[in-house]
Length: 314
Image 1 (tube, one colour):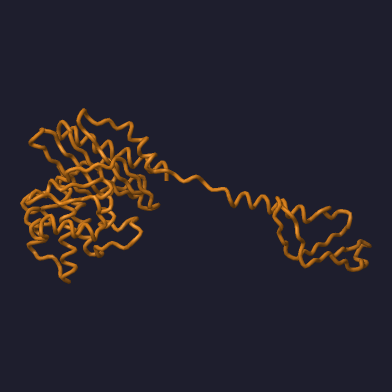
Image 2: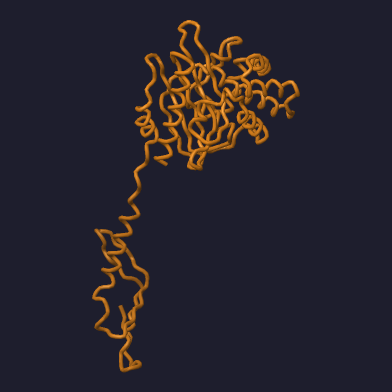
């Protein structure tokens, strides 16, 4: 370290100039080179006794702060804890998947397979639109008529017509491979309502339809997505239950099916909701419900619980 001669300054005070190419200090056993320092003082006696140690202390504090991170949130665990308050009936079971669109965070509770019942109609329409995209064409007038009544009114006859148009289970499975669904299998023959799926797969389908939080572009183009969302936002009044209970606005498709062998009900609901100014994608599947009413109550309770849980954790 070099020192220049002192010289008189105004008021008879002296000014001290210190310079160095680098100062090497040891902090916790690690050596760090500090940039060139230049200090001045009106009174030499007021200068700090050790600039290097002061900088070293700052370096140590910054190093500790840089390595301190917030612990990762286990959203599945958060949802599982919240779902303890949701009590299914004796033979009922429920699974739910939820995505906070803004943050991209998601959670799933339950991983079993369920009958789709009529929620598969969204999947059927997505498969039809993919075929139309591949052919470079718009849906025909007849296809649009079937699509409208299939989604808005849950027409089974229209669903069967479009199920045949996409090639049945094989066509659905091929489309789902492109859409990213890995746990869904088309029903046998004309039994599209017995397609097997999971809540996680239905959330994947919703991501493809709503273009939200998927991390990659949807294989459905913007026109196809807008078309499906428009129909899901206009389901008839007596079908506006389910995930809609969790939000102030919604687009949805519900499914309900009494099983002839047991007399128990499959009740499902999938869609998009807005709650508290945030957007969520929701899929709630249930089976073994004692009645349609009991199943709807279970699905709506699970939907509200899931949105509240992830909203509080994000």
